Figure 1 (cartoon, rainbow, N blue to C red):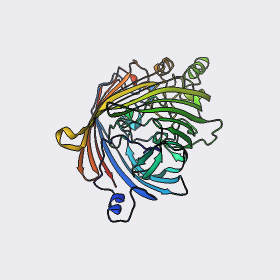
Figure 2: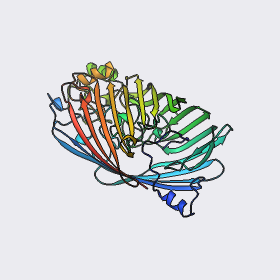
Figure 3: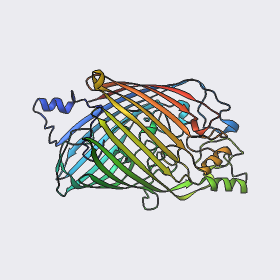
Figure 4: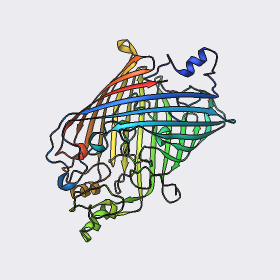
Length: 466
């Protein structure tokens, strides 16, 4: 959920039942002006990958190929959200969460289009609980119009001024606040592929679960919003441990947003930029080190590495030092009619250094549409069609072609082509506060390698809310 009041149509709205609504119906809770609330969710996603053609797999000991045989995987998550109003303008939130998972191919072999957005880099089939969020939020009001805020997870119902400053501190996902999109963002009820969660090339600072600790400031002036965030990244690439030395290792992002109305239909445009300073490896530095001394290969580094056994390949572990990584992107959404919305995202990252926290993608775009089921008498159902494509930088491709690997990809060599995915879903509202989604994905050039694939992936998702 977002840290701001959102007044856009919810394609998956279900006001029939919630615990807060039930308490309000019995006069036990003021759902229009909340002092506290409690929500929960549970989501299970089952994935099945068909066998696909591959000219080679894990060539010369490089370990990051998507396995060509048929596979099944799953994720199961449960989250509890508790919110409390403290003093004037202050809100406190906590959200303990559990995950159990079995990724396809050990979460290797797919770049910017990982088939299940819930997957985490350190998860296991055993249930693991952790504090996903612990937030202090302070709002300073400066007037303007009064906007209503509906009750929801991480959001207390009430009213806010259209001109205000919102300060957030604590542990959270930066995607709780930045790069929001009505039609592609809440993937527990929309698309399943990670390419539609945010820009695939947005290497936002986060631990292996996707959460971070830091500070965010948001200034709202009617239809405009400006956001700035300073957050912690992991100690090592794709690691669970967070580096709290936030003066020397950090991720920064800024976002400018404008909301508009075209022919009575709402929309928004957002410009997002990020800058990371982290102990990361440059592809060219890794190649240079290997050429100067072939003993500095993927098998000899005792530091943090990706367990490659390819002795004839460079490795990023020989090149890690304080480096800067930057990117800029655009995010568009537009309601066409009451029941149809479209979206577009695109981002360009510099591509000089390794993926540190998100997916193996240096440039990315995604677009598509979501349609509510009003036209066929199923107003709480929805259907979506999306396309996403990712690219790698020249340096990244050269490194992979020499047998190098990064956190997710590396087949031993590469016949480079952009990675592409089509994601089609139908969300069926089964009973009150429960949805069943059928999802199909067609993945071309997995790990940006035309020598492998295409891959057909099928997902089934069950989602409950309370």
